Image (cartoon, rainbow, N blue to C red; front, side, top):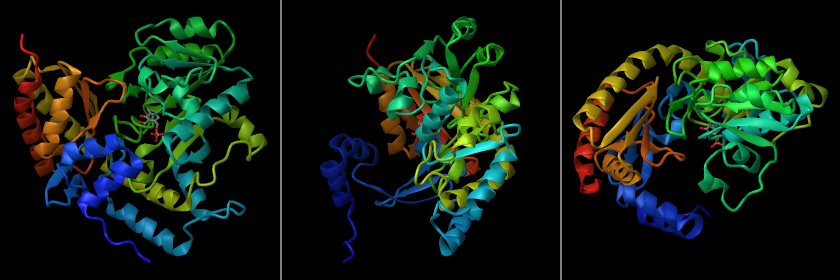
Length: 413
Ligand SMILES: Cc1ncc(COP(=O)(O)O)c(C=O)c1O
């Protein structure tokens, strides 16, 4: 028997009872009793008829919601063969691997997963097994996911508390410490250095010494893994920051928007040397739904659409940059810093309370953004490549109103 449709109250009640009361509270705070019922492009529709511009969705909707070409490809695959036997070669999966490898040369080997953390786990396992060493260097403020292995590389104390000891052999490198990688690699026991070219959850921060770190790691025979799950796929300009900046990485990781914002898909793209354990034994690291044919069908078309839309990112980025600079100049006591690259922007507010206030005020005024999981005073803006001029105007109207309202959250001086 089919369940009756859930009213917004029933939806929130179910979230509260079965998922988490905290989630229900947060959803309610943002949408005042409404729930999301549909979306297209950069706009999300609510059950009460309101529409919100979506500059959030944790970086998944770089192509916007329901990009038509991606949706059509998924429909087509659904009618042919949605799932794989995994005992036989699947054309949708092979087509995607070919399309991705064409964009990541010389990284021609590909492992497919569903989530970002899947890709991180696979890359670290490969680095340890291929090098015969165990130590991994990760960066201060890094975010690589929340599964136990990935969490060992993620810096946030809040997510690690009560779970330690995590994976042994992780050394934290200071963001500003130019010589740290060379120093640690000299010990001879380091398997890999993993870093995000732009730390997303850590507050939208570019790593100032990334190129030197990559060179130092390479010189010591240490694998370089660029985690571009958030910053890659033209989010910050190029398809891959590490490849474009010639870090000569051994692996680049992708996720989030890789499935076109329609289906979950992640990938490790790697050199033969790093991928050696899987060349020897392809069953050594697998996941039942990793590289699912529906996701791969979405991903193949998403790669084409991304390429087509990427040039729009530059113009959109400069408009966002100018708008945020204007806002910061208007509210110097409220906004302490603005940082950004391409379509990944972080706005620092005076305190976490002010950032929290702006976050909810923005939703009230029609704009969804993402918080930064590792930087509570930062709000992240992730405009999709398909954002229209009208949506951008609405977003900045909301920012202007939310900043004015957020003065109430400033502590009196
Ligand atoms: C850079 C980076 N790596 C890994 C992850 C983990 O991805 P997922 O949440 O899909 O497991 C994230 C998620 O935000 C991320 O930003």
